[in-house]
Amino acid sequence: MSSLAADSALLGARAVTKTSRNPASIMGAILFPLLFFLLFNVTMRRIMEAQGFDYVQLLPSAIVVQAMLFAAISSAYYVADDRVSGVLQRLLSMPIHRGAPMLGRAVGDVVRAATSLVVLLVVGVATGMRFDAGIAWLPAYIGVALLFAVGAALAMGLLGYVAGSPDNAVSIATIPYLPLFMVSSAFVPVEDFPGWLQPFVEWQPVTAVIDALRALTGDGDIASTVGRSVGWSIALLVLCGYLGARMMRRAA
Amino acid sequence: MSAAIEVDAIVKTFGDTQALDGVTFNADAGEVLGLLGPNGAGKTTMINVLATLLRPDSGSARVAGLDVVDDAETVRQHIALTGQFAALDEVLTGRENLRLFARLRGLDRSAARSKADELLERFALSEAGDRSVSTYSGGMRRRLDLAASLVVSASVLFLDEPTTGLDPRSRTDLWDVVRDLRRDGLTIVLTTQYLEEADQLAERIVVIDTGEVVASGTPDELKAMTGGHSVVVIPLDPADGPALGAALSPVGDSNVDEGTGAVTLLDTAAPQLPEVVRIVDSTNVDISDLSLRRPTLDEVFMQLTDHSAASSESSIQTPNEHVAERNAS
Image (tube, rainbow over all chains, first blue to last red; front, top):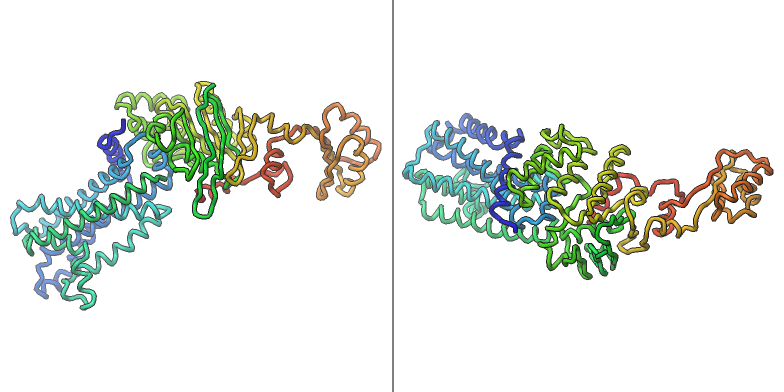
């Protein structure tokens, strides 16, 4: 009776509708990444270029990953909202596929992440970013970014599930976001972190994704960086997908 | 009548809390069964077990003849749940909510559309149908919530405290809706902390306290457990209470309330009223009230659940206290 695809599509459409009607979500998906992009350009670009970095080329991929993490944090908000409002409970008392609430949520997350991605690619290219490894890598660039967005969103969604309220969910989800993003290769090269911190910076998932995106725009080895990035994203998907499915089976 | 719900020795523990401790009851097809109990009694836990949202630790429960654990998926096709809080999407409009839930229950696009229109009409929400639910009043939310439970015809409807937090007008409106549904032949399991609500709606009541069934029966059967009518005489000056009680003792066993001086004559009904009045008159005590009282479920409830807040006039709970039970479950 229950179809995972049909039920997820319905809940995915709902997630997109909700996001599109929430001014905070639209700001978070479009305005914030744009502001970060512009402000970093204004404040840091000359210093970084003086240090010999190709900032125009390096910055957009960092902000793309930041936007993917924003999408994941908003997923925590919506998961908490569904749980606290009782909507999740209602869904689970209905004869729908147990995986549909999570998958529908993921559809909404991908649409939101893709919106940020398009906006950032447009302004990135407009300000001088180039796909030096070949424009053929653009689909891979999009794939690597969105795959990470879904993996991170499932992880943040678990936090949202146990957070108790949507506001708590955002706060709790911000806790892993801050160190993972700031202590990554986003703004500072791995070698410039303190020695004891470098292993973390080098191996953590956010660095992996940023390095992969930069490699796909011509700065780094594609095979190894994309491999590590996709590995992290799939690990997140499998682990958090499994934990989420277990929670759904035990339910409400 | 076949049993629509059979609950047999259900046990459910959360950590150190024994939420359900061997609960057993049945509900016949087509009847309204009231689950009555104070906060934390286990009512919501019981509903969640029946609605396949919680697995019991032991015992068995069947809904429409199907086991809630082994046949959970099939059970879900037969039930509709309206939880303690209106489980609606605040951002979507009323119409969009109904369409979403209708489509998830398997209706195609056009069937879902007409079902939504029909339910909005039936629950007097047509005009508000295209507004986001966040603009709805408490009563409107509850009606929409109930409508969302009825997008397909379920055979068993669970209503978990459907009127908690509603104003009196919205409450009686919702009662009318429940009576309508009863006429449609649905089996309804209703939890409530409002004794009047159980009295108004339920054909049979199961009283639960601290996870156990402490009594069950029709409202009249339960009321009979308190021993019938009583007469209450309240002196103007509380100090006159003991003397008044002593004077009235030939009529029936009397209790005197120390605070108000109110004298309650147990097992005293209308035929004895003239005698009561004569005695009161002869004592020359000024009285502020004299009334004949039917037994209320409140008294049954107090007696059964052994609560310390003794006066039957005082309400058992405040509407906000239910949050505690929800958090516990």
